[in-house]
Image (tube, rainbow, N blue to C red; front, side, top):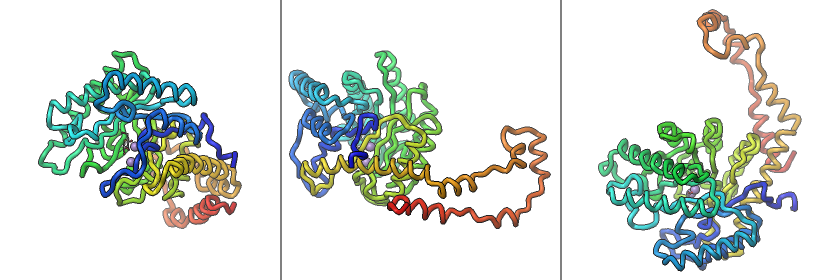
Length: 388
Ligand code: GLT
Ligand code: MN
Ligand code: MN
């Protein structure tokens, strides 16, 4: 039991909007009362989280007066000081207000695009004020219902111009802040631009300051698109672009469910945790999920504790996998190099190309090899189910 107690070094974080989610959905109203940001910080501290993230308007309501803003900040800061929770990430709400119905940075209305820049610069100031080091951009409304409404290439250009502008703003203010762009294929728009990790990585490479910008992939968003999330995360990591991660769970082919981490596809969650731990990912493990609508605030705590507990249990399983002699023997065998072939790999040379072309391969013998993946996968299942 105690082995699965969250510690600050686990870097488990939650957004104010996650534990503060009130259970509203398109078919029903709120089922839980509203809690203040400070109350949510105490709740997160009680369950053992390390940090709390926010959208500008999770903390300061859009139409708050200056006095209200000051008093909210004061009680939020007091809660952070009393609990020791930190704010590693902040973001802008560019999706809720009706003004963003056609998107923010990609809206067809230049007034909306300019307003989105203004709102984001103010929200960046707010994030920096509370010490955020990562700034997330989730463009939920940056898309279309009908492709007749927008030129898709133009939309990407608008997005690039906005991110370039905001990078310069951050440098101008001398903030120590990196951007993490979060892809999602659809919902709330019928289609959203830059829908996957791969699209986003391609987009980032075209920016003026690509070194400042990485991705914030989310389990559910890749699973909605039917993709293998761990593989996308691995590609982002390999490119040096895994700046943040949103952990939750999701049944593929459905609306955005934001389920408790590891509650649906435990095997995918295992490979994900194993990857993050193996490469020593050092960023936040942010749970972007919420409790079932059936729950009261005790259930919200069960949800939050469950996310962290499952992560830690899977982390232990990953260590077991790495120490399991039979699994490791198979892995060694199937990954073995053939020294006779080593000279043929690596950087191109005309001689190498000629040598490979002239090499005589015994195709049938090579093809006859069995890879033992069935055995390996079953050992993994045995291990996850506690039978090793
Ligand atoms: C919203 C969305 C998430 C984003 C959040 C950050 S807001 O809950 O569903 O995926 O990460 O804007
Ligand atoms: Mn998210
Ligand atoms: Mn989501």
